[in-house]
Image: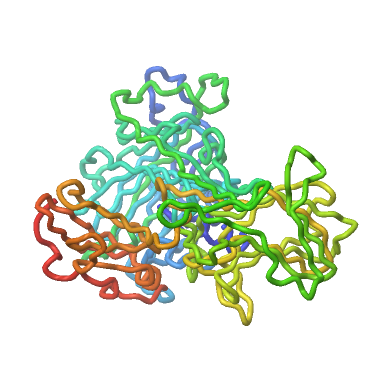
Length: 623
């Protein structure tokens, strides 16, 4: 299950694109359940620490908080999944030892369905252990029963860098589209988020019988179970988090088991419609998701590393663990002791230079000088009595394309790119009430800018500074145009707003991406295309990521007459296509249109806007 509040936290100052929202009754906490613990042999391996058996006649609000509405209050209409229901407390009942979450066809606000959603947020949270629930999933096309976990207060930025663990997702139960999933979400913040997902072993009658869905979570491994069968395992090297750790550190890979090394809380909900199940079938509503119990155990083994490991006697060691995964990173030096170089045409290097194109009538001067700290080498010394700026740009004057780092107008889509540099502020020569504007431009007036308040910076010592590319892309000012990363002219601009004496060094652009080679700088004339070289070397089925990058297919290199989609088309339409691009052994190409285009309703686009390939290259042959 995923929602979008993580994305919005960064942008609005609060955030989880997975959901983190936030008496008396039945149920109990850490009581002995009537049925035996999961491992009868040896029993002492796991110790029950929390449970709700739903034995009363109402929901225990000491265990669970009820979430209501459509997610709008949290900034995520449709709960980030295009869900079609309004969550209500009226759809939750406890009776006969069970919790029932009911989906009904009834109008509330602008929604035609209601259902229920609860969580243990700020009531019960834990790190590491075994968590399980006995559940009957709701049957029917368009129903999405979920038992999952979210971090309560993650230090790892926004979803999915902050992590999400889905213990059970049953979609479209008792239909030909039935699927059962257990998933770990990790990696980068949305939209670059990663996931490891595996369909469960076939579950017989998931809506007619209770089945026990479980996750064993340690700092070394994640193991998913259905009815005691370990069907999926993910080792620690199969997940990571790449997140923004603040101005002085910038982006980094989380240590150890991050993001799965902090407290998580539990969620239960029944969604109607949404990105996974699709449309609601005739007669699917009303429907019930029934929960017999929820239990959490801790491992009694003495793990010297404190990672909750050592309790795995029921693990299937014959399972292939998920693939290892790690982020791709790259960096480009703009200035270290001297102006750097960038890739140029035909493999040649492009020289960069430091300039001042606006010195405010001589108020600003700069020089490249040896640092007082001799180990640092040469730095850029900037002095001004009132504003002005310096910039680093290519000597040839050509614009440069940055890719995989985000772009306008979708500045809110988080990408892990940053300008980093070392800064020394001379307090004696700098107005303490002024700011240092850090900028990048696509040729004035297309500017991205971020203000560093001098009062917030260390004085009279070197400090490291990171400015996320998303902050530059988000900049708006009357009379200026937004930054365009496909046409960068000035890579780094330092512009004091008052009197200042500062030095800068080690200026670079850094980026991270889940895909190998997924971000970087293109040389002039390089449109990012790949010459596939013709058949049969490139036969197979390809998917194209929804980013600002072009795809052209034709009979000759450089000939895109068979099919093409350009940068502007991808960005403007925001089409998250699930099409297949098939290169056949006989040299023919086909574009197989998928069942879904993953369009968000708020984007105001329709399926037909995603375009179609040119006939006859629109479905001939099989890969």
